[in-house]
Length: 411
Image (cartoon, rainbow, N blue to C red; front, side, top):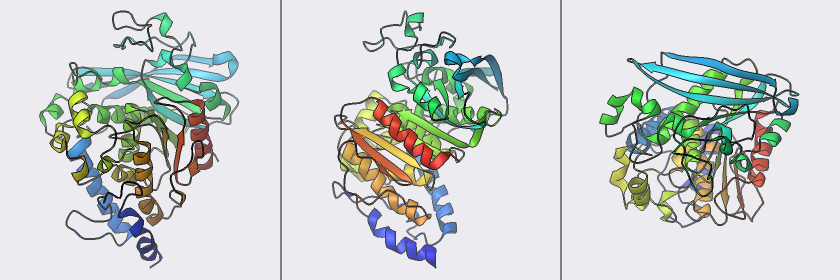
């Protein structure tokens, strides 16, 4: 009776987004029109939502591989001036004579009591880019040469690429808070280029999945690789696998959310400016839209998603469904004032719309508040902030992520 009463109290909050006044699909209504009335009902509805988003947007991923092994090829117990143990691990997956592999980089704080909580996330430029540590293996996968990172020669990382993305990875602060940091490179997992889509990495293991309309999209592949990282962490005695948060920024923030939605082992999700296909509400019709996603980045999502081109306001689901799959585990959405493509108001609307599910499941959800002022984070079981500036990961973001993680992951 208490659960039903709670449901009736919080249900009206989800019928409309706070901003835009755009009616949203209801996570509490089954596809056959019946309503969720109990915790048992919710588990069935959750399965239905997961099936819908897999079929209509993210695509079908393979199960955990049967032929997978982990090779620790580097361990330095006095890394970073003695602050951390650096461990590097190759994940090797074999399927029908085909092999894919990618590397995990771990920094484990030496002074914290082990096993420690951890934060795992994909990176954009290669493991060697998150810190200038000369012991990090240079990736041999393709690396994009850009104005931001002019260290690449013929698509390959060079010694000049060490630490070039360190400003987005607060390694020292993460370690000082007692967390291990685990990262892996997106291109070692799956190509993020339209011309090479599905031709490299883990996609080569499952060519049959690309014949489907709900094919194994790249965002889903990145999320799947994060779960394979969790498979390794379950074997690492220095990591408390019940206290692992998954982190991502931009397109990799989309992958972090989907990883949290599909794998309940992730204890929390930290998503920074994930925008369309991540934290942004499509139905507002603001910022990056489905037309751009399926045209410029057709490999990110399943081919089935293309049928919603120019139909953002007509979707039978929206991104609060993804947060509902994560519920009741903690999730944090961060955004920035000048990141118009990510639509900060739309990310807040998603957080607000998911609040009812979190409260239905017995948590405090998102604090009851209007859209917050700059640098004024909201922190419940759902967290949110907007800061000044543009599309980036700043120290302010990491401070909020770590504060949020301290509340939910530290003993």
